[in-house]
Amino acid sequence: MTEDAHVAGRTEEDPRTHARVEEHAHPAPAEYVKVAVALAIVTALEVALFYIEGLADGLLIALLMVLMAIKFAMVAMWFMHLRFDNKIFSRLFITGILLAIGVFTVVLVTIGVVGD
Amino acid sequence: MAQAEVRHEAHTATGLDNRKLGMWAFLGSECLFFGALITTYLLYRGRSVQGPFPEDIYDIPFTSVSSFVLLMSSLTMVLALSAIQRGDHQGLRIWLLATAFLGMTFLGGQVYEFTVFVNEGLTVTRNVFGSAFFVLTGFHGLHVTIGVLMLLHHFGMSVAGRIGQEDSLRIELVGLYWHFVDIVWVIIFTVVYLIPT
Image 1: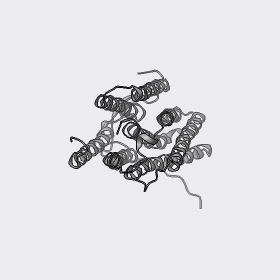
Image 2: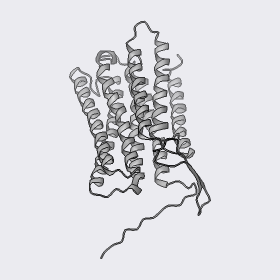
Image 3: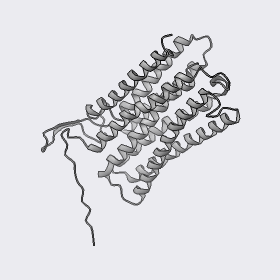
Image 4: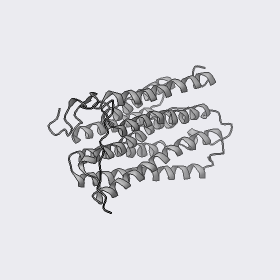
Protein backbone atom coordinates (compact mmCIF):
# COMPACT_ATOMS: atom_id res chain seq x y z
CA MET A 1 0.00 0.00 0.00
CA THR A 2 1.45 3.35 -0.97
CA GLU A 3 1.91 6.06 1.64
CA ASP A 4 -0.35 8.61 -0.01
CA ALA A 5 -3.18 6.25 -0.79
CA HIS A 6 -6.22 8.20 0.34
CA VAL A 7 -8.68 5.56 1.55
CA ALA A 8 -7.38 3.25 4.21
CA GLY A 9 -8.08 -0.45 3.81
CA ARG A 10 -10.51 -1.71 6.39
CA THR A 11 -13.25 -4.18 7.24
CA GLU A 12 -15.95 -2.72 9.46
CA GLU A 13 -19.28 -3.85 10.84
CA ASP A 14 -22.27 -1.56 10.37
CA PRO A 15 -23.60 -1.08 13.94
CA ARG A 16 -27.25 -0.97 12.83
CA THR A 17 -27.35 -3.79 10.31
CA HIS A 18 -24.29 -5.79 11.42
CA ALA A 19 -23.28 -6.02 7.76
CA ARG A 20 -19.54 -6.36 7.22
CA VAL A 21 -18.25 -3.70 4.84
CA GLU A 22 -14.88 -4.42 3.25
CA GLU A 23 -12.85 -1.72 1.54
CA HIS A 24 -9.22 -1.52 0.50
CA ALA A 25 -6.98 1.43 -0.22
CA HIS A 26 -7.49 3.21 -3.53
CA PRO A 27 -4.27 3.70 -5.50
CA ALA A 28 -2.20 6.88 -5.43
CA PRO A 29 -2.27 9.19 -8.51
CA ALA A 30 1.12 7.85 -9.68
CA GLU A 31 -0.34 4.36 -9.98
CA TYR A 32 -3.24 5.68 -12.08
CA VAL A 33 -0.71 7.28 -14.44
CA LYS A 34 1.13 3.95 -14.78
CA VAL A 35 -2.15 2.22 -15.65
CA ALA A 36 -2.90 4.90 -18.26
CA VAL A 37 0.55 4.44 -19.83
CA ALA A 38 -0.06 0.68 -19.98
CA LEU A 39 -3.45 1.31 -21.62
CA ALA A 40 -1.84 3.58 -24.23
CA ILE A 41 0.78 0.91 -25.01
CA VAL A 42 -1.89 -1.80 -25.42
CA THR A 43 -3.87 0.51 -27.73
CA ALA A 44 -0.74 1.12 -29.83
CA LEU A 45 -0.23 -2.67 -30.01
CA GLU A 46 -3.81 -3.12 -31.24
CA VAL A 47 -3.34 -0.59 -34.04
CA ALA A 48 0.06 -2.08 -34.96
CA LEU A 49 -1.51 -5.55 -35.24
CA PHE A 50 -4.15 -4.13 -37.60
CA TYR A 51 -1.42 -3.01 -40.03
CA ILE A 52 0.63 -6.25 -40.01
CA GLU A 53 0.26 -7.79 -43.45
CA GLY A 54 -0.07 -11.54 -43.90
CA LEU A 55 -1.46 -12.17 -40.42
CA ALA A 56 -4.24 -14.78 -40.58
CA ASP A 57 -7.68 -13.32 -39.79
CA GLY A 58 -8.29 -15.90 -37.06
CA LEU A 59 -5.05 -15.07 -35.29
CA LEU A 60 -5.60 -11.31 -35.70
CA ILE A 61 -9.10 -11.54 -34.20
CA ALA A 62 -7.88 -13.68 -31.29
CA LEU A 63 -5.03 -11.29 -30.47
CA LEU A 64 -7.29 -8.21 -30.74
CA MET A 65 -9.87 -9.80 -28.44
CA VAL A 66 -7.18 -10.60 -25.83
CA LEU A 67 -5.83 -7.03 -25.92
CA MET A 68 -9.39 -5.65 -25.70
CA ALA A 69 -10.08 -7.82 -22.64
CA ILE A 70 -6.85 -6.60 -21.00
CA LYS A 71 -7.86 -2.93 -21.52
CA PHE A 72 -11.40 -3.60 -20.29
CA ALA A 73 -10.10 -5.32 -17.14
CA MET A 74 -7.53 -2.60 -16.40
CA VAL A 75 -10.11 0.21 -16.57
CA ALA A 76 -12.67 -1.75 -14.53
CA MET A 77 -10.22 -2.93 -11.87
CA TRP A 78 -8.14 0.24 -11.36
CA PHE A 79 -10.10 3.26 -12.60
CA MET A 80 -13.49 1.89 -11.49
CA HIS A 81 -11.87 0.46 -8.33
CA LEU A 82 -13.42 -3.00 -8.61
CA ARG A 83 -10.09 -4.41 -7.44
CA PHE A 84 -10.35 -2.41 -4.21
CA ASP A 85 -14.09 -2.04 -3.53
CA ASN A 86 -16.62 -4.41 -2.04
CA LYS A 87 -17.10 -7.61 -4.07
CA ILE A 88 -20.85 -6.98 -4.37
CA PHE A 89 -20.13 -4.28 -6.99
CA SER A 90 -18.01 -6.71 -9.01
CA ARG A 91 -20.74 -9.34 -8.86
CA LEU A 92 -23.39 -6.89 -10.09
CA PHE A 93 -21.25 -5.78 -13.02
CA ILE A 94 -19.97 -9.24 -13.96
CA THR A 95 -23.54 -10.57 -13.86
CA GLY A 96 -24.55 -7.95 -16.44
CA ILE A 97 -21.52 -8.77 -18.62
CA LEU A 98 -22.06 -12.55 -18.48
CA LEU A 99 -25.78 -12.15 -19.16
CA ALA A 100 -25.03 -9.97 -22.19
CA ILE A 101 -22.32 -12.33 -23.52
CA GLY A 102 -24.57 -15.38 -22.98
CA VAL A 103 -27.72 -13.96 -24.53
CA PHE A 104 -26.04 -12.40 -27.54
CA THR A 105 -23.77 -15.39 -28.23
CA VAL A 106 -26.93 -17.49 -28.48
CA VAL A 107 -28.40 -14.88 -30.87
CA LEU A 108 -25.28 -14.85 -33.09
CA VAL A 109 -25.00 -18.67 -33.16
CA THR A 110 -28.72 -19.08 -33.83
CA ILE A 111 -28.72 -16.64 -36.75
CA GLY A 112 -25.49 -18.11 -38.05
CA VAL A 113 -22.96 -15.30 -37.80
CA VAL A 114 -20.79 -17.35 -35.42
CA GLY A 115 -20.08 -21.04 -35.89
CA ASP A 116 -20.88 -21.31 -39.62
CA MET B 1 -38.58 30.56 6.62
CA ALA B 2 -35.04 29.41 7.03
CA GLN B 3 -34.51 25.78 6.26
CA ALA B 4 -31.79 23.75 7.89
CA GLU B 5 -29.99 21.33 5.60
CA VAL B 6 -30.45 17.80 6.87
CA ARG B 7 -28.19 15.01 5.70
CA HIS B 8 -29.53 11.48 5.94
CA GLU B 9 -27.06 8.63 6.11
CA ALA B 10 -28.58 5.47 4.71
CA HIS B 11 -27.84 2.28 6.63
CA THR B 12 -28.49 -0.71 4.43
CA ALA B 13 -28.42 -4.47 4.94
CA THR B 14 -25.21 -4.61 2.88
CA GLY B 15 -23.60 -1.70 4.68
CA LEU B 16 -23.00 -0.12 1.27
CA ASP B 17 -24.31 3.19 -0.04
CA ASN B 18 -27.52 2.72 -2.02
CA ARG B 19 -26.46 5.25 -4.66
CA LYS B 20 -23.27 3.38 -5.49
CA LEU B 21 -25.08 0.04 -5.49
CA GLY B 22 -27.72 1.55 -7.79
CA MET B 23 -25.06 2.90 -10.16
CA TRP B 24 -23.42 -0.53 -10.46
CA ALA B 25 -26.82 -2.17 -11.10
CA PHE B 26 -27.47 0.47 -13.78
CA LEU B 27 -24.07 -0.20 -15.40
CA GLY B 28 -24.82 -3.94 -15.34
CA SER B 29 -28.05 -3.26 -17.24
CA GLU B 30 -26.19 -1.00 -19.67
CA CYS B 31 -24.05 -4.03 -20.63
CA LEU B 32 -27.21 -5.58 -22.06
CA PHE B 33 -28.15 -2.35 -23.85
CA PHE B 34 -24.80 -2.00 -25.62
CA GLY B 35 -24.58 -5.79 -26.03
CA ALA B 36 -27.77 -5.63 -28.12
CA LEU B 37 -26.40 -2.82 -30.30
CA ILE B 38 -23.00 -4.50 -30.83
CA THR B 39 -24.72 -7.80 -31.67
CA THR B 40 -26.96 -6.05 -34.18
CA TYR B 41 -23.87 -4.49 -35.77
CA LEU B 42 -22.17 -7.91 -36.04
CA LEU B 43 -25.32 -9.39 -37.57
CA TYR B 44 -25.59 -6.72 -40.26
CA ARG B 45 -21.95 -5.84 -40.88
CA GLY B 46 -21.20 -8.13 -43.83
CA ARG B 47 -24.71 -8.21 -45.29
CA SER B 48 -24.97 -4.95 -47.18
CA VAL B 49 -25.70 -5.38 -50.89
CA GLN B 50 -24.56 -1.86 -51.80
CA GLY B 51 -21.69 0.31 -50.53
CA PRO B 52 -20.06 2.08 -48.94
CA PHE B 53 -18.66 -0.87 -46.99
CA PRO B 54 -16.64 -0.60 -43.74
CA GLU B 55 -13.25 -1.11 -45.43
CA ASP B 56 -14.06 1.71 -47.89
CA ILE B 57 -14.61 4.44 -45.34
CA TYR B 58 -12.98 3.67 -41.98
CA ASP B 59 -10.06 5.95 -41.12
CA ILE B 60 -8.18 3.85 -38.56
CA PRO B 61 -5.43 6.42 -37.69
CA PHE B 62 -8.08 9.07 -36.97
CA THR B 63 -10.22 6.72 -34.86
CA SER B 64 -7.11 5.50 -33.02
CA VAL B 65 -6.37 9.05 -31.91
CA SER B 66 -10.03 9.52 -30.81
CA SER B 67 -9.81 6.27 -28.82
CA PHE B 68 -6.60 7.43 -27.17
CA VAL B 69 -8.24 10.74 -26.22
CA LEU B 70 -11.20 8.97 -24.58
CA LEU B 71 -8.89 6.53 -22.81
CA MET B 72 -6.86 9.39 -21.34
CA SER B 73 -10.08 11.08 -20.18
CA SER B 74 -10.51 8.12 -17.83
CA LEU B 75 -7.16 9.01 -16.29
CA THR B 76 -8.14 12.66 -15.74
CA MET B 77 -11.49 11.51 -14.29
CA VAL B 78 -9.90 9.25 -11.72
CA LEU B 79 -7.42 12.04 -10.85
CA ALA B 80 -10.42 14.33 -10.20
CA LEU B 81 -11.82 11.78 -7.76
CA SER B 82 -8.44 11.34 -6.12
CA ALA B 83 -8.16 15.14 -5.72
CA ILE B 84 -11.52 15.61 -3.95
CA GLN B 85 -10.85 12.60 -1.71
CA ARG B 86 -7.71 14.47 -0.55
CA GLY B 87 -9.70 17.68 -0.12
CA ASP B 88 -7.94 19.32 -3.09
CA HIS B 89 -10.75 21.43 -4.61
CA GLN B 90 -8.61 23.17 -7.19
CA GLY B 91 -7.31 19.81 -8.39
CA LEU B 92 -10.91 18.57 -8.64
CA ARG B 93 -11.88 21.51 -10.87
CA ILE B 94 -8.82 21.21 -13.10
CA TRP B 95 -9.26 17.47 -13.69
CA LEU B 96 -13.04 17.70 -14.14
CA LEU B 97 -12.55 20.40 -16.76
CA ALA B 98 -9.78 18.38 -18.44
CA THR B 99 -12.06 15.34 -18.59
CA ALA B 100 -14.92 17.38 -20.07
CA PHE B 101 -12.50 18.88 -22.63
CA LEU B 102 -11.23 15.44 -23.68
CA GLY B 103 -14.83 14.19 -23.88
CA MET B 104 -15.78 17.13 -26.11
CA THR B 105 -12.70 16.49 -28.27
CA PHE B 106 -13.86 12.90 -28.74
CA LEU B 107 -17.37 14.11 -29.61
CA GLY B 108 -15.94 16.61 -32.10
CA GLY B 109 -14.05 13.76 -33.73
CA GLN B 110 -17.23 11.72 -33.94
CA VAL B 111 -19.14 14.60 -35.55
CA TYR B 112 -16.30 15.00 -38.08
CA GLU B 113 -16.28 11.24 -38.79
CA PHE B 114 -20.07 11.15 -39.28
CA THR B 115 -19.87 14.15 -41.63
CA VAL B 116 -17.16 12.49 -43.74
CA PHE B 117 -19.15 9.24 -43.91
CA VAL B 118 -22.33 11.03 -44.98
CA ASN B 119 -20.39 12.94 -47.65
CA GLU B 120 -19.06 9.61 -48.93
CA GLY B 121 -22.60 8.27 -49.23
CA LEU B 122 -23.04 6.30 -46.02
CA THR B 123 -26.23 7.33 -44.24
CA VAL B 124 -28.38 5.62 -41.65
CA THR B 125 -30.76 4.47 -44.42
CA ARG B 126 -28.16 3.67 -47.13
CA ASN B 127 -27.56 0.02 -46.14
CA VAL B 128 -27.77 -2.26 -43.10
CA PHE B 129 -24.14 -1.57 -42.19
CA GLY B 130 -24.91 2.17 -42.08
CA SER B 131 -28.00 1.64 -39.92
CA ALA B 132 -26.17 -0.56 -37.41
CA PHE B 133 -23.05 1.64 -37.36
CA PHE B 134 -24.80 4.96 -36.81
CA VAL B 135 -27.19 3.57 -34.17
CA LEU B 136 -24.37 1.93 -32.18
CA THR B 137 -21.84 4.78 -32.31
CA GLY B 138 -24.63 7.39 -32.09
CA PHE B 139 -25.94 5.94 -28.82
CA HIS B 140 -22.39 5.80 -27.49
CA GLY B 141 -21.92 9.45 -28.46
CA LEU B 142 -25.16 10.29 -26.65
CA HIS B 143 -23.78 8.64 -23.51
CA VAL B 144 -20.56 10.66 -23.83
CA THR B 145 -22.62 13.85 -24.23
CA ILE B 146 -24.58 13.08 -21.05
CA GLY B 147 -21.27 12.41 -19.29
CA VAL B 148 -19.83 15.76 -20.41
CA LEU B 149 -22.95 17.55 -19.14
CA MET B 150 -22.62 15.80 -15.76
CA LEU B 151 -18.93 16.78 -15.59
CA LEU B 152 -19.65 20.43 -16.36
CA HIS B 153 -22.53 20.44 -13.84
CA HIS B 154 -20.23 19.16 -11.09
CA PHE B 155 -17.51 21.61 -12.12
CA GLY B 156 -20.06 24.41 -11.69
CA MET B 157 -21.12 23.03 -8.31
CA SER B 158 -17.51 22.90 -7.20
CA VAL B 159 -16.92 26.51 -8.29
CA ALA B 160 -20.03 27.49 -6.31
CA GLY B 161 -18.55 25.76 -3.27
CA ARG B 162 -21.27 23.13 -3.13
CA ILE B 163 -19.02 20.06 -3.26
CA GLY B 164 -17.06 19.26 -0.13
CA GLN B 165 -14.61 16.50 0.59
CA GLU B 166 -17.46 14.56 2.22
CA ASP B 167 -19.35 14.62 -1.10
CA SER B 168 -16.67 12.68 -2.96
CA LEU B 169 -19.18 9.89 -3.63
CA ARG B 170 -20.96 12.20 -6.09
CA ILE B 171 -17.74 12.51 -8.11
CA GLU B 172 -17.15 8.76 -7.79
CA LEU B 173 -20.59 8.03 -9.30
CA VAL B 174 -19.96 10.39 -12.24
CA GLY B 175 -16.58 8.69 -12.64
CA LEU B 176 -18.11 5.20 -12.72
CA TYR B 177 -20.45 6.30 -15.50
CA TRP B 178 -17.58 7.94 -17.41
CA HIS B 179 -15.29 4.91 -17.14
CA PHE B 180 -18.13 2.68 -18.31
CA VAL B 181 -18.59 4.84 -21.41
CA ASP B 182 -14.84 4.48 -21.95
CA ILE B 183 -14.81 0.66 -21.73
CA VAL B 184 -17.77 0.45 -24.10
CA TRP B 185 -15.61 2.36 -26.60
CA VAL B 186 -12.72 -0.06 -25.93
CA ILE B 187 -15.03 -2.80 -27.21
CA ILE B 188 -16.44 -0.75 -30.11
CA PHE B 189 -12.95 0.26 -31.29
CA THR B 190 -11.86 -3.38 -31.50
CA VAL B 191 -15.07 -5.03 -32.71
CA VAL B 192 -16.29 -2.33 -35.09
CA TYR B 193 -13.09 -0.77 -36.44
CA LEU B 194 -10.18 -3.20 -36.10
CA ILE B 195 -11.64 -6.68 -36.64
CA PRO B 196 -11.80 -7.39 -40.39
CA THR B 197 -15.19 -8.03 -42.02
